[in-house]
Image (cartoon, rainbow, N blue to C red):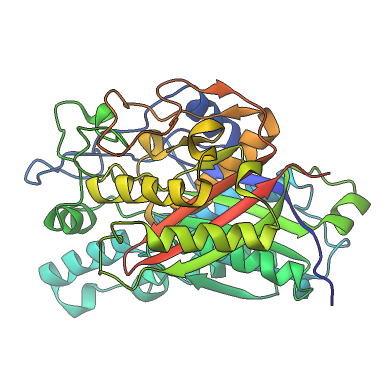
Length: 416
């Protein structure tokens, strides 16, 4: 059976740069930093005092007050971003175009409800078992992200969570793409959501020596590919893409952002938290995605890098890009890391970066890598430093790599 062509018809974003798609994208193209001092708890005892928090979010417009206490922030973000994405795609409230049983939701969630877990663990320590809420388990488990989305919006098709560390939402989008391409589902709500700016979240990554400790200049702390990078900045938020077949989207007059044309996966099989030095896993992943798309490396205009601002990732990913793209890596490929502005959204990182890749195609604008003052050793590509660049983007690639050596790449193209 011939695979169906799959397109993106809606995008919703809740991020450290804004509470909507256009606010977030505007922040990214303006080189705005979403990083600042942590406001959610007193972080003074930790080596890192800052994060990229979502600011000013209220679930009131999307979730009944009685249900809000049952859901962790990552689930609330998912419902809000889905509302925007379904509205954008002209599917919100449309119960006739698609059968509910063929409308699914697959989200990437790397960790899940740390906030609600910490809240009720503290209550237990203070008051004993009777202080543990019956909402603890359903509030913290990761599959209630897509589960609550499905309940809210009546999606009765496939429903599950992908948990593969920082690659979670890229895997989720890729698997959703496959389901529509193969005719298993007609519409997929997909992407990722995460909220782990909490004492355990910050403390755990501090213990790994993974976070930047540039407390005196938090907005300059996320500096992918820079010589002075010292770790990533923890971020949070959600990005949702609506996927459907090109044929059905055109038939109903849906807005079409871009086509999903490639998906590749791989594993380093190397180390629990570090990438292979030569970027072998990234190489295999990017090549698999290009093979799926039937594209040559020189057809890619823009690559949204994983670009975490850690010493190990940035040099390894650059090495992998050079291997895959050869001369084109320096002659024609633009690369940037939007984590320099959003921080690292963990399980939701791939989703917001996929969304930014699609918006780059829409607007012919490549978002910058801010804080890139002095490129590090081996980091010698065009990372679009400091300022966004007007540039036609016909094909965009988005990379995600995670702990355990798991990797995924998506390829999007202008729809013709």
